[in-house]
Image 1: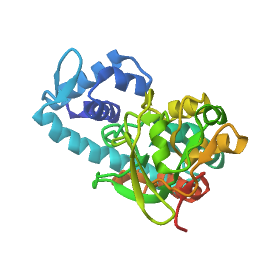
Image 2: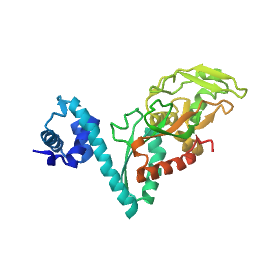
Image 3: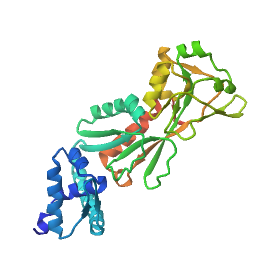
Image 4: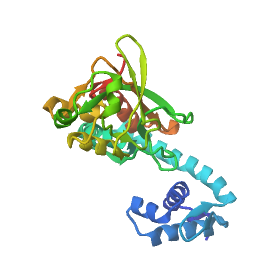
Length: 307
């Protein structure tokens, strides 16, 4: 083979395998068989005359030559995509795929419908929505935009601050009837508190009182969960009391299935941010979704934008 066998399809396959490190995952993503992915890599290596990967039974890792070649391939593919974007911008409505990652519970309860509405306005745009509470590598996973709750330290991404997510203490009426209603921070010591195992410091509740005094209250309980939707169901089932984002339980508060507690005491809000891969921020379809999500954030329950 020669350089004419370095096709864009083989190059795209190589880049995705380099970023995912898993042949079967890339095959699923591309909607093809793993044998096709393997063949693309073999043919590309033959064309360039160098081994691009070190392979094991479970993972593949780039060689030194592969790392250098990957950087060049990314540049080439971005130029090809940018050229197509420019033509589409001139010729008509935006098209293409946007890969979005979102905190799972927020995505299920709210962001999905925002995505549906966006696609109704832009039917040519496909959205690949991934829901996870883990801090993933956006570039490696091929993500364009990520919606995240909590403090962020990734300075390589373009950060758009959407606001703060307010939180409150909630419990089901049945739980309160059985265990009583807390009125002050000290009362929480006698209650079964639902805690988040994936949130650092969840064994302590920090509340600010009406006089500005800050209370740090150790709490205990017989149930820990690692997902907001699991906490929501635990509250509904009267398994305990605990903190919740307003957007997580707003419908249950309105229906009376849950009750807000200790209104004179507030919990610290959580930052709500959008992370954007810098090289993707100027792509028309992605810029449209960025503007749309930023505008809709103010309408999410309990999101305080400061506007």
